[in-house]
Length: 89
Image (cartoon, rainbow, N blue to C red; front, side, top):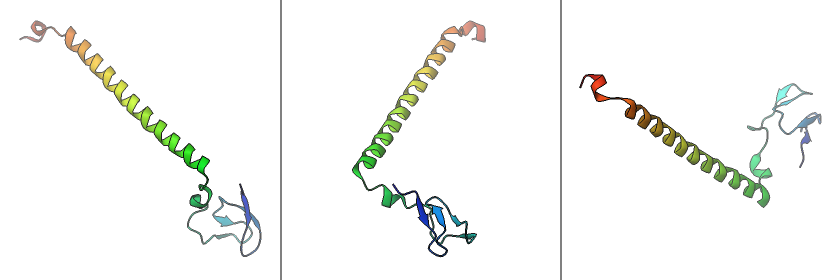
């Protein structure tokens, strides 16, 4: 994977993530520093990205499910300890 390139004007070596040419002290004309579409073409990267998304969604679902369970459990404990006669009913 290429991480270095040269400035098209002054030929100073710059990183692909640079927004400015250090030789000219000017901003590059490209809108983004790295075009990720060009680099993400291989199948292994796509599979890793899909796996990361799937694992993230699964972890969010499990976190929400456990949080709801804990909140319901605490609610049940609080409700069972409340005696209606203590409340004046």
